[in-house]
Length: 289
View 1 (cartoon, rainbow, N blue to C red):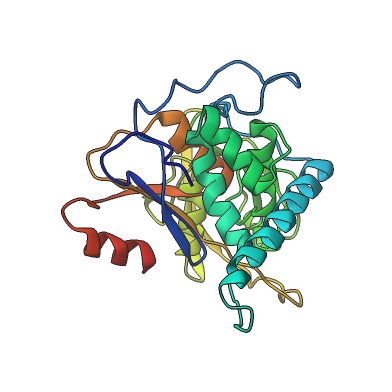
View 2 (view 1 turned 120 degrees about the horizontal axis):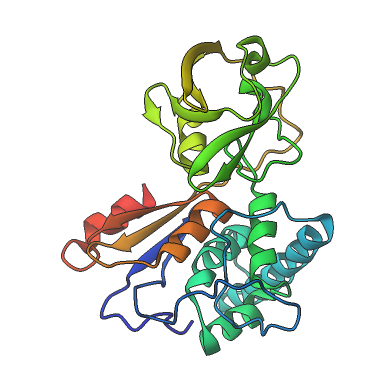
């Protein structure tokens, strides 16, 4: 794959599940993302734009289009990998590869973006593509609202993110959140004394939560803290897919805010710093741990 940024070192590593690669996104690698609304006539290779207020939930047609893209990419990938030794067993995750590349795609422009779209069989406009990825991987901290996942019921909230604030969009009846008196419109400012500055913080706080958590909320100029005994999640379905997304950038390299925002909102991924240049072995270990 062609480098996505003219930098003297791999500026970024993206990981989805067990897959990671060196990739994109250093400041100055391409023009800033367009802030204007995307139109159906806009070339797909324009820099992917992400609204500062977050993404709308993708619709069913967009999700199906993304699934078809990933399936087509999977067949291509297995075909290429299988050519090396036709008698060998091949085990890999095309979804993880597609997700990792999907996280770096908002940092691509021009020929590179076009090549990624062709290789990954992307057919959706960039903003819809990000929403579809987010919808496929909606977890306990999903900022998209809409239909709650089974994990929402442990606390009982559907939340929405706006301008860095996580607000309660819906309190699910019969859940611990309702019993604790939490209300739609309240802002979640902290969980177990961990500040909540976005959907990723909310998801991570719930991941670290014990059987009881302290939720601090604010409604206007009034705030309160409540202790909530979390419910056990319902039994899992016959299969369960858990995806952990992350980005690691070269220490000292500035990444464009819209690129970081895309990773956080669409993939619930944090951007962490490691030193690929001076401590490559340590950086690789951090990425893979």
